[in-house]
Length: 101
Image 1 (cartoon, helix red, strand yellow):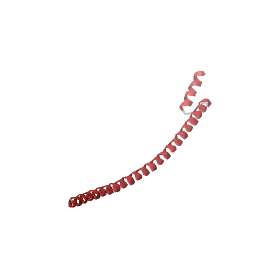
Image 2 (tube, helix red, strand yellow; image 1 turned 90 degrees about the vertical axis):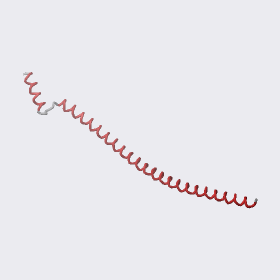
Image 3 (cartoon, rainbow, N blue to C red; image 1 turned 120 degrees about the horizontal axis):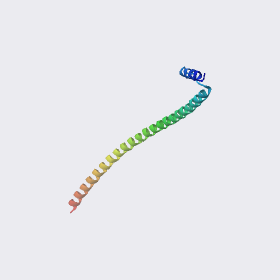
Image 4 (cartoon, one colour; image 1 turned 90 degrees about the horizontal axis):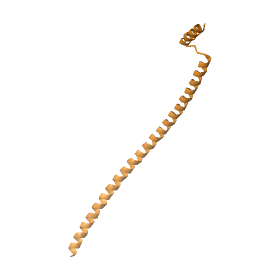
């Protein structure tokens, strides 16, 4: 009779039937996995928000960098013009000095 009972249990298990103890264990595992899933979803959401903030910050830095580069170009042009003006003034001054001699 014990063998018959074991065989019935195997058949029942094969058909998807579970004992109360197994059901409790499976439900505990399901609950644990659900909690893990929820935790991972929260973490994913947090990381997505951080990523979005970082993208905005990167875009702002890129814009500032572009503005600084443009400003640097303007300053460089002004510097070249000033150097040319200084050279011109030096040349004029040298020529005036030579005339006075």
